[in-house]
Image (cartoon, rainbow, N blue to C red):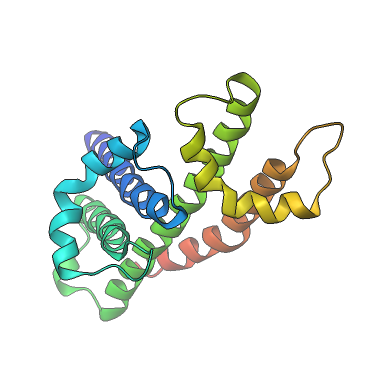
Length: 191
């Protein structure tokens, strides 16, 4: 019972840290306003690791590769700790186990990225009804614009309602069910 609680706590904390690194990467990639409180908070929260990593891993254009690499490393550490807590013999494991660990870490980053954009779209849709001028609205708009703009061009408004967030919700759920879950299942069965 204690091990499960510890796994839950570590999964929560390291997933939140991964989300912060991913958010920093995507906010920079989408050109979100830097002087927004959300952007400032994410930068302040992740500077401890991103600044030193940028000395080793330069950005590629607008892509903050240091933040992306840190998100991957955080997921890799999470996978290693979970296996260690479950008494998995890592020191005598076969090479395929380490490839599976790298795959699970990458899949964790992909899954959290999908959830990040899914919840950003949902929060933006709800805010557009409740308070469209909220302080986080410009950041959410910048973050979700690359997903929603192509859909908005192709989909007409139905009675003044934008259905593009619903399409994003359905597509992300399908990706999670049809691609991410089966890959995760196969990788977990290598242990």
